[in-house]
Amino acid sequence: MLKAFLVDDEPLARDELKYLLLRTKAVEVVGEASSVEEAAEQIGSLVPDLVFLDIELAEDSGLMLAEQLRSVDPAPAIIFATAYDEYALQAFELNAVDYILKPFDETRLQKTLEKITRLRTIGANETVSPHESPKLAADQIGKLAIMAEERIILVDISSIIFIGSTEGKTLIKTTAAEYKITESLVTLEKKLNNSSFVRVHRSYLVNVNEISEIEPWFNSTYNLIMKDGSKVPVSRTYVKDLKQLLGF
Image (cartoon, rainbow, N blue to C red):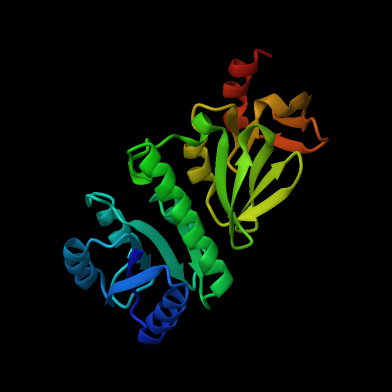
């Protein structure tokens, strides 16, 4: 049976989650806490398999506790259980196993437990915890994790045509779909470092493999005509770098 620890500053939310977990008959709730400090003290001695962690606590951030727990041996599986969807990408970067939203759904929770069971099985077969697997950059695995419509979606990097910043959102245009996310262009640029993406404008990154034509524009600027017909502007600031890269 899995041992779980709950961290939430709302007693009713803890009670609801505890009730749903006990109904599965696969989980024993070994402890609860309302703050990071209280949780850190208990988790060290109770050694739970799972920690269900809220993010916005009264005086703390659950993200801070998740970072601390990465150094615990053995490290518990982290499941963020929160009312806020905007932290999902940060959770992913902290090796969270899952991210579930309030109000809790019993079917969704069951899927989380099934996922954890699969990971533990894989970890046992490989004699290594999933938390100990090497961290790979997005370009190394060919996937970019984004949060869209309350889901973490893994986008094939090679399918991305361009990434642009517009109206306070970041638009990711792929060969199959478009996604509007809250993550900044600067953050995505860092994740895509050493890949086929280059910045051509303060608001645009483009996949050079998707450029089909370079169109001269006014005042020594250019437009990039992408394979899907999209036009992306190249500002004067980035013209020199683009010329050196593509040799025109």
